[in-house]
Length: 112
Length: 114
Image (cartoon, rainbow over all chains, first blue to last red; front, side, top):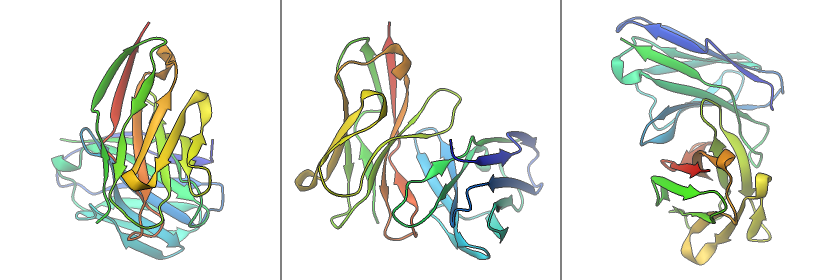
């Protein structure tokens, strides 16, 4: 398995609070992604990064922000959590454009 | 926008039955196609991928998929399933609109009874 860790693995929070999820890789890969997985929707892209400090929005970016200050870390922040953001969040990495994406173990987030 | 359609939401099979999961994509240009599997409680793992060349792609655990360009399809097959194949299966296409990000189908849940 690719060296990808996510933290926390599980989190329960309240509506309106900020939440930050961390993805850490040891592969020195250039590209990093955040997806959310919801029943009946598969995985949908939230944000992605193509280098340090280079990020862009995905399909479902509203209410989320990201930062990448180091190659190995990609942070996802829910600025003010809502119940609709209850989901499983997966980080993925890839080396270059034509390479396979590898997924982290996921973070299960419950917003009450 | 690109999209991926998986025809079956839930498939139930007995062990040793043959499997075929349908996947169609919308993009007409050069595509990269993937099948991922997610076992219960685990993260996504790559089963197989198609970038170019032989349209019949073999992956891990006896799975294969055939790319049919004229039908915009990339169906997953396995001649004889096992109980351990119980999982959710996702077809994905590489986007030309979001860097190297993948667009996923909604997934197919496979339940195999022993």
